[in-house]
Each structure stands twice: as C-alpha cells, then as structure tokens.
Length: 97
Length: 187
Image (cartoon, rainbow over all chains, first blue to last red; front, side, top):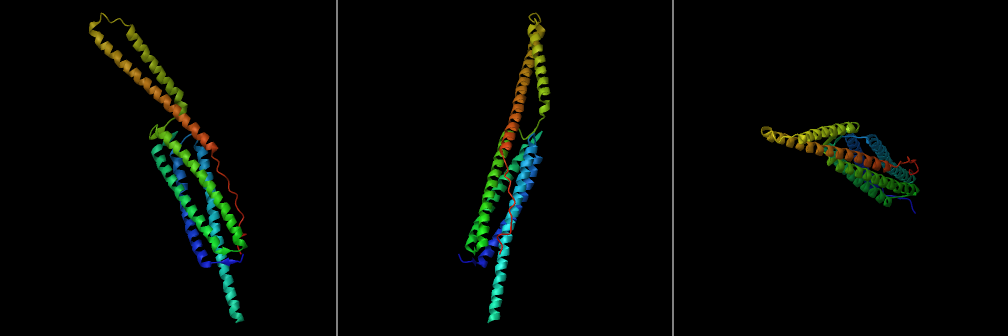
C-alpha cells in the first residue's frame, strides 16, 4: 500500500484526542477524590483490602492515561515529521527549478 | 467500626457517574483513533494502530473491573442502609452487651416469678397496685427481649455483610498492565 498521510484530518483527530486526554485526566482526579471520600466514610474490617484495590485501580488508570498521552504524542510527532518532509521536498523542488 | 451510609451513598453515586463518563470518553477516543487509519498509511501507522487495538482491550478489561467494584459498593449500600444512616459498632463488645441484657432479662423473670409466688388473696388494698407493677415488669421484660433479639440480629447482619464484602473483594482482581515500549510508530 502506498504511504499516505492526510495532515489536515489527522490534525483534527489529534486535537480531539488531546481534548479526550484532558477529560480523562479530569475523570481520574475525580475518581481519586471519590475513592478517598469512600475510605473516609467507611471504617470496617475490610477497609484495608478495599483501600488496596482502590489504589491498584488508580495506578492502572494512571498508566492507561500515560498510554493515551503517548498515543497523542505519536500523532503529533508524525504530523510534524511529515510536514517537515513536505517542506524539504518543496524546497528541493524550488532549488531544482 | 463506623459507616456513614448517607455520605457513602453520595460517593457511590459520584463513582457511578465517573465510570459512566469515563466509558464515554474511551468510546469517543478509540472511535476517533480508529478513524485516523483513513488518514495515515505507512508501516509505522500499521504498528501504531495494532497497538491501539491492544490498548482498547486493556481499557475494556479495566472498565469491567471497575463495574465489578461498583457492584460491591451497591451491595454495601443496600445492606448497610437497612441498618441505619450512620452505623457504629464494636464486635469485641458483642458478647459483653448480650450477656448484660440476658442477665437483666433473667433478673426481671426472677422478680416476676416472685410476684407470682406471692399470696395476695388477703391483701385487698395492695392487690391492684401489685398486679399493675407486675404488668409493668412483664411489659419491660418483653421490650428488653425484643431489644436483645434486634441487637443480635444487627450484629449477625453486620458480620454477614463484612464476610460477604470480604469474599467479593477477594474475587476482584485488578489486572496489571505491562508498560509498553514506545518508539516503533514514529517515522
């Protein structure tokens, strides 16, 4: 298959992913706050087990968030590199001309 | 031990909303990432989108686990709210409290028995008031008996809830995500 990139549309995707990453961060912070509040309102014999599970979820979701941030960076990076290539090609074309 | 059921209910309500919104974000995010396959074709893109599919599965698993935790929270709320709004208990005091109430009941029974053994046929003046006092003691005995049964039931219910939640939590495994190695998708 021929190499191909639609920079304009990929930029739109990148911007949307950027927005979702920010929303994800917001939800993660809300979740951390809710877990903490649950622990404050619940003092039982299983509290320690529950706290551990909640901490595991936070770690797991933080890692997922980092993965999504990286997905976004990859998109950004590739768009920039393609743009650089296009500029170089255009420059070479002008030089030859 | 202490559970503030009202506050806990609010927290669980927030938790449910967060998970719902989280899921919506993920659905939109992966839908958007999938649409990018139309706009980017090269060997790096192939590796990138393959990884995105694996990631999508990881998020799906996490959401399933978060929903399982949500079910445990709902069970806790349903169970505790039947006992009260703010519940405080100490299982170490259980035997002491029950024993004290049983002794009290024993003493009341003893006094009522003594009333029954009294010969009041010739005590016309005192007869009515003594019968009234005996009636009061019987009412108190019944109340304390009901109270004892309620306390025993509440303690048993609290123990049952703790056992059930512990069991449910022990079944909930939060899967570990191995940190992926980046760098193969860039040109």
